[in-house]
Image (cartoon, rainbow, N blue to C red; front, side, top):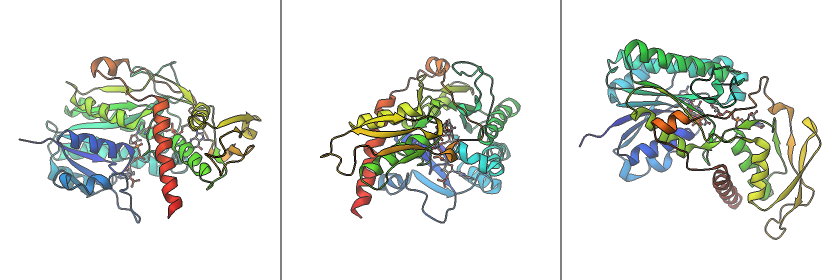
Length: 360
Ligand code: NAP
Ligand code: F7E
C-alpha cells in the first residue's frame, strides 16, 4: 500500500500539532519542519514523536521559511503529495513591533515554498495549502465576510498574509499548481499560544484560582471575534486540498462574541460571579460571589481583570465574523465545537497545568 506524504511547516505550533495527529490517523507519512531554538519548542508534538507506533511515520526536519535552500532540499527529498504552510510570525500585536521580520517570514517564506515546488519539478504532484486569515478583512467591508468580501488589512501581519494569499493564487494560475487558501477565522484550543487573548484569559484565570496571580491585564475587551476550535479547523485544511480543484475557502463558525463575553463565560463556567466597574482604560472586574471552600485562594472584592493600555494595538480590527456558506456547501463541513465547549476544554486543561506546576 502506498501512503500519502505530507510536509507541515509550523508543525510545532497549535495548528501544526493537531494537523500532524489528524494526518497520521489517516495513514499519512508526516514530515514536520521545525526551526532551531535555544530552548525546547516541541512540547505540542512530543507525544507524537515519542509514540513508538509512529516512529516510521513521523519525521522532523530542521528548517526555516527564510532558508530557501533547505526548504528545496527537504521538498526534493520527500516529494510530498501535500504541503501545509502553517509556519508564520502569527501574532498580530507583535507584528507592529516586528514588521520587517513578520513580512519576510509570512510573505517571502510562502513564496520560497511555492518556488521550491516549481524548482523541484513537482507542479503536477504537490498540492499546497496556505494558512490565510480573517485578518485580511481587517476594516470590514461587509457585515459577514466571505471569499467575495474585499480585503482591508490593518497590520503588518495582515499585510504580509495578503502577499502570501496572492502569491498562492499566482502560482495556481501561472504554473497550474494545486495551491489553495484556507481563510480561517480565529481558532483556539488548550494548545493556543499563551499571548493570544483566549489562552491569556484561561491560563490567567487558572493562576488566579491557585493564588499564583491576582489579575489578568488586557487591552480592547470590546473586540468581536468568530472563535472556533483548532482541532475542528485543521480537518478543513485537509478537506481544502481534497477538493476537486484548487480554490479559496472561508472557514468560520459564523457566530460572534466579544472578548468581554469570553471572560465572563470563563468565570461563569467555574461558578464565580464577577461585576464590571469603570469605563475605558479604567474598567475592571471584581469578584462578587464564589464558593470559598472550592476556591480558598480567592477573596470577595478581588480585582481579577484590569485594562492596560500596552495591550491596545496601533490599529485595531475590532469586528470580524465569517460567512462560511461556500465551505459548508462544497466541502460538506460544519464546525462541531461551540464556544462553551471550547471554554470548558481550555479552562479544564489550564487548571490541570497550573495545579501540576504547584506540586513541583
Ligand atoms: P502558531 O501556534 O503561532 O504556530 C506558528 C508556527 O510557525 C510555529 O511552529 C513556529 O515555530 C513556526 N515558525 C515561526 N516562524 C518560523 C520560521 N521563520 N520558519 C519556520 N517556522 C516558523 O500559529 P497557529 O495558531 O498554529 O497558526 C498556524 C497558521 O495559521 C499561521 O500561519 C497563522 O498565521 C495562521 N492562522 C492562524 C489562525 C488562528 O486563529 N490560530 C487563524 C488564521 C490563520 P516555533 O514553535 O518555533 O515558534
Ligand atoms: O486577539 C484583543 C485584540 O491576539 C484577539 C491570530 O491567530 O487570529 C489571531 O489574531 C482580539 C484582538 O488574536 C488582549 O486586540 C484584548 O482584537 O487573540 P488575539 P487576533 O489578533 O485576532 C487571526 C485570525 C490570525 O490569523 C492570527 O494569526 O483580542 N485583545 N486584550 C487582546 N489580544 C491579545 N493578544 N492580548 C490582550 O491582552
